[in-house]
Length: 171
Image (cartoon, rainbow, N blue to C red; front, side):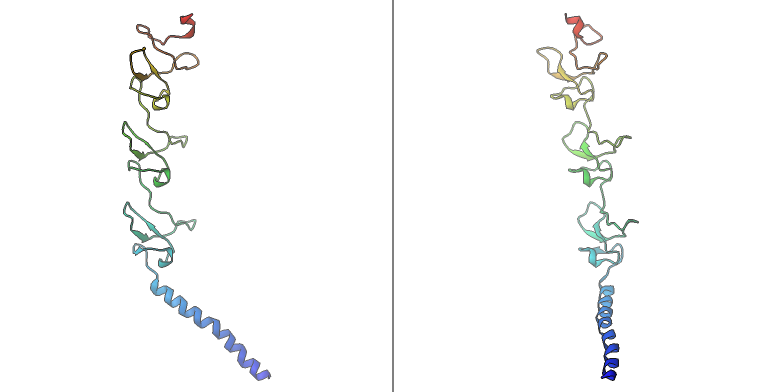
């Protein structure tokens, strides 16, 4: 009985090792190196399969220092639909068009959309850099105008005046 136990112990130790060796051998054959096309993370030696350009094709890529798989992001100037598409994580309207573009954030890490300059035509306050869109008279279309006064208010401009009409002038 003791001799049977001594024979069984070495056999049990060998059983789990054989399947593991064959699995590792299979994995090494199926793993692709960095730069090769792939569809899933498991195909790559780096265990990282992501897009690396505007093309939808995925490629094996190295992981970051923090063991993350980061896909390619669009640089500033590329058309985007969402902040996550951009390297800067800022996708905003640029210029007079309706398209949105990747753009740099401010030094305060804000993602600000492009706004119309003063005296440009507007429909809403949010369209203007000054955040002030008013009609200059009853017949004219609305325009972006600079805010004025001590409290920087959005006040109508009066023809001939260099400053906007303030409340104390109206009384």
